[in-house]
Length: 442
Image (spheres, rainbow, N blue to C red):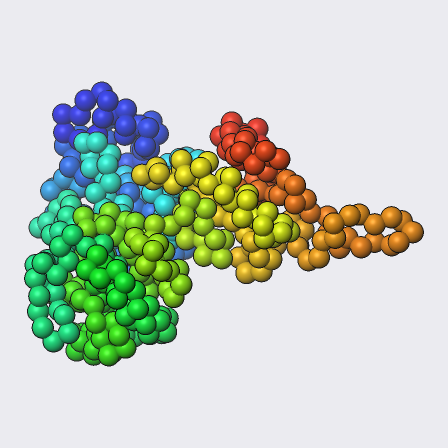
């Protein structure tokens, strides 16, 4: 892709974008589009999006005033609703673009980089296509002249810095050495944060007595002033959360590393910064010391479906099963799900619905599955009148493969009676081979 690009690197560029890209009113070969470039920004944007139209002129100015010369190329990936809008909007932009006709490639890129909203700027290495940062928008706005281009994020240890607040005192890295960490991204101005903080503090004060020095929490503030941060941190300490706090001047350092897009967020990470549990909020208040370090189970509870919007998910709809059968099914399918959980980037997530409410009911509603109400053990005879309100099988419960990243696709199947994962594998294979009917969320 970059300077002196080999055939292999050029092939990667074509694989990523397809054979042709737009440059102004012309089409050029993707294989040679990035020669001499160090990094490529994939710019997901649209004409109809007000934040996009606010950001695009600034980004274009930065690009023309120096970022281009420093080795940045940009590819506009349109979410416009028609080609006329695409052409009008692209006419304002000075870089390359994915052809509007390449809608399948656009969908593939959005899915690959887990784009949830626009504008989004993903920076990749022009030499190998590897992601540098998915928060390129912040990188560009903080450094419009490209002094830190190509904006390689700091390592976990670099981002942490050397000092932490501990109440009114200052401590060094010895305070976290070798410890599993809870990273708490929160802010004083955020109502959900202020509701969750007392619960977290109460849980921490109890769990800390049992796990001791194996665990520590670091508050990563999203407050807008140092005074607000210190006031909020004092509230946390007073409530029992006498954990550590990043100093105000480095409070945002960890955000890009962990792609923090909303608060409150509570992550559990290893001493070297590897994520153990993305859904730390779900641990509070029930997680116990004997479950430390609180690695999520291979089959999660559908009531807290963390990651379901970003990753295809297997949903086991077990609401009509007795509790003992639910437990048996989950236990038997856990080894199958574990294979996916052990992947560095899991291809599929697994969730079990055990109660007929909340997210489970929403999934049934969105996918047109019959609701779970009361199911009798035996079908009634015509003379007795109908006793079955709904016909649902507890022998072969329904499986829903939700593929929200694929523009809201889903697939419906049945669990194999052997409960060995073969029914799920058949669905996965059918989706891949396009032999299983794809349905669309309404």
